[in-house]
Image (cartoon, rainbow, N blue to C red; front, top):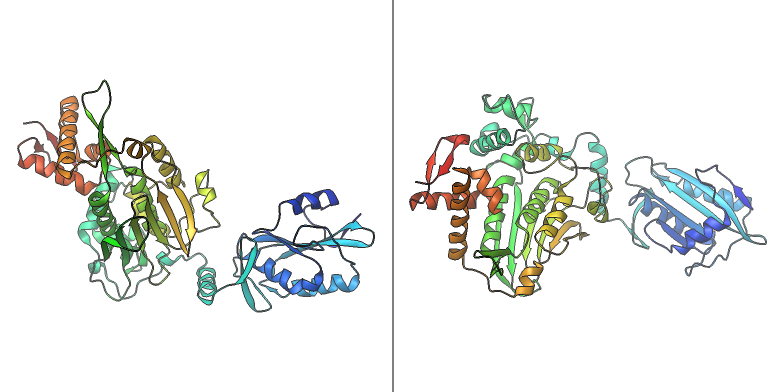
Length: 476
């Protein structure tokens, strides 16, 4: 028998209840022996609203999942109805009663969020973490309130009042325009003045510089606004007990991306071995270069810049490489969802747009899928995604081929010579090459390609011709 107090979307019968209980307690389900624990149960429901946005509490079920039931009278119904009203802001609450044995029922209380929150119960906010409920910290509560108040005005769209256009890196802006034209993601702006371009990209509003502009183009000595921060570390062994190298930088996002790439060039090994039947040596990277770069770019794009003291961090250990970005995933995304088809939910839409125009990211939520596919392509284990201590982490494990071969890392000199050989073979095959073609073929950073090509020109191995975006290289 089912007594439905409020007509819900799904009527719960005894069979459905038993299936639900079999799942056990978790982030969206809590068991309480009776409504004598009503306050604790609704606090848990509040935590679920602040997490998944919905949840269910079963009154009349023991911690072990036994359907013990309870006697339900009119007073019980009134108490639940009155207590539910103490969840703020108001949410959609449905209450059902399922008879489990003579005179005893399980009360099913389900809630769904109607507003962004944060939600509180009796003036206190809670979080549901796995199968436990805990008080929400004040900083987390304040951050969520700020997010709600911002509404349709995300953090990066707000004006940085002390900044001026002259405080932005004009050379970096021009490089961005050039890359955007090359990537066919910008037209009709190349001849425009700097302030016009910035206004059309919404980086300047009513003559004022936005926070997004300060993050992607702000010069190091810019006024009165915290710049992006990058922390780089190479640890000895597999723990953080001892550093081999430790660096920190503050600059705009593109400068920090280049610093991170230099650091990886310095510390990520490449193994060398010969394959039977082939004369050429095969160089195997310790970690998938394109996947690591994608993870780095995503870290700068999606970092929660509203969190004071945050940063993008790269940590290299003997057995793994980790990229950390301050802030958890936006828009209800979970780490598990990133390994399947998912929406693109950029926290910083203006910042993401500049990276997209420059050809560094896609718009359609494919970044993590590209990371997984690239790791698989080069024979590396599947990267791991997780949220930890208020940050999002991408963890790379070394190439299976590198571990299997146990080959020593090649020296920088021999790797440099090998790359020069690849470039020469590319020119012989097609007559000439561009910087972008070399960068794609070698899977290295733009700065590394520029250094290699400049060295080859100096040695007389290749000859440049053309200018600007038409610059190419041929054999002498």
